[in-house]
Length: 326
Image (cartoon, rainbow, N blue to C red; front, side, top):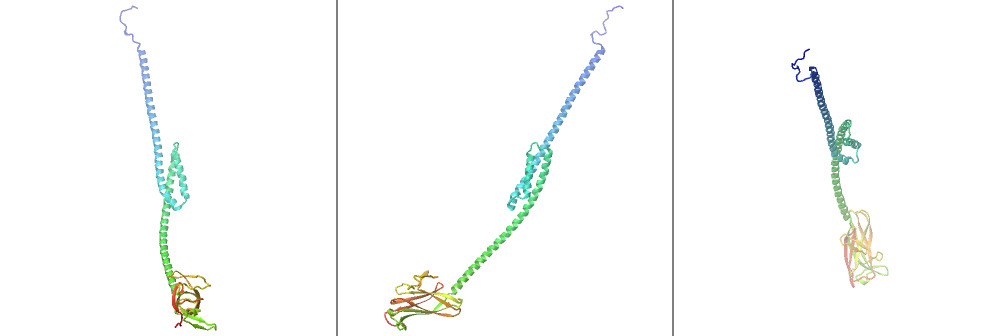
């Protein structure tokens, strides 16, 4: 074969057409692989984002549930606090219901304070809060009932106190009236004395008695009077006699000594003698007794008669150097 000088059909020394196809195919495969990798990475990123978003939503839901339970519990506890004090005041010691409420509160508080509490724990806490509110409603009804009963008792007590005050006033009035009546009866039962006579007597050796005007001859003063009272009951009554000599001294009975009587108007006074009188209701009783002294003075002798602390009569006799009385 003869060699010619014609140029070649592939002047740029390009590879054969079959080699170019293989290379293009390889590039396409690499590009497809790259695109697939990017797609997978993008899909995985999106999937991870969705997972994170779901986790965040779940976390938010969990926190929201915990917070809502906390709010429900706080509200229930506020209601409970508002009635617990009143119930304790009305009933004294805690009731079985209050003790159960305290136990439920402690368990609910434990769950809400537990950072690792599960959804099941929170669900149980929600049920317990519902039960707690029901218990509180029961306690509120009990407090309302007890408050009503307490108000009724208070009203009854007020009425009884008022009635007691009225009764005490009536009793006080009755006591005062009774005391006044007793005092009236006491005063009214005091005897009155009448026909008071004071006779100076000289006693003869023969036993005869003679009225005398001479002080030095008087052996005794015979005091006589009548007593009477229409309301005084029958029985013994004491008459107190005070004899005051001209020198102003009260003659005393040696057997009594310096005896004193508490009078209603004149305070304590010495008396000469006490005469027991047996009185019969509705009658007039004559009383007579002697006053003796070793030496009688000239002048006025004052005789005072007391009964029940009151002076019921008095009289005066004058003894002179000589002469007769009457």
